Image 1 (cartoon, helix red, strand yellow):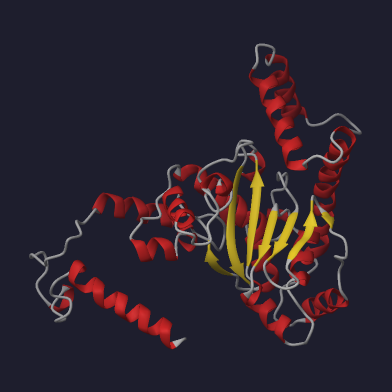
Image 2 (cartoon, helix red, strand yellow; image 1 turned 90 degrees about the vertical axis):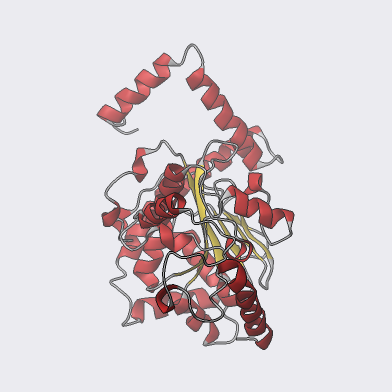
Length: 355
């Protein structure tokens, strides 16, 4: 730990003593002294909020992850802003999809996945944006770090900044290895929407995005263990990869590699080392993930082809947003009933043969 970090944290904790409890400095608080007597604190206990947050944190999102794993925020901790959702149910639904489709498969393959930063309430994120603390605007963060608000297209989403210790060690073993290997691996195997890589330890903001009404994400969360059978596809991806870490810039845009971006020879080394590691689980699931990803990518490629045919040179995201709004208008208009009846029939009977 850096000396200045140690000093800053210690001084902050010392300043908190008087506002927290006037007897804390003398070690006569809590178990060291009588309870439920005046302590001089300016903080009023809020037991109803504490109990609600306690329940919220206990919500299970997948086999290995609970909501509490995603609630810590340095901004909230340093400034006393509770990281409390506006819509707890949507936060849980978006977080479940993130865990099911991205974090559990990564944990299944690599072992432990460290969560550095994840859910931010609109209050916490807004404060961070206003004070230049590496937070995007709230609007840009909806269906991203702000899990409990949909984006402008009505899609839900969730982002977690993660570090994979196994990959950090592998990356540092040999000169020339870098974050792009992990980016390509996730791109080839998992239904991510966006990735943004940072300087230290190949930390990455990993985002899942999808339809909040899609039943593909429903099910017993205890079964979401990262195996191929627990994946719920049908995401609404952007397929974009950026990095602040050298080589910085845009690696993938709209699902396609940018000029000069390609898999290096280290990608093959990575796959061989991964499959040959005795500490890894049975990696035959990679084949199943790749096959499912092909279907997902094929759907995305058809969208890209439609966009290029209709709006060449324009923004794919804007075109897609306009398309989504047109679909919503058709469904909500006076002639929407046939669309709903057709959808209900499709869900009951399944797609037509060969369709």
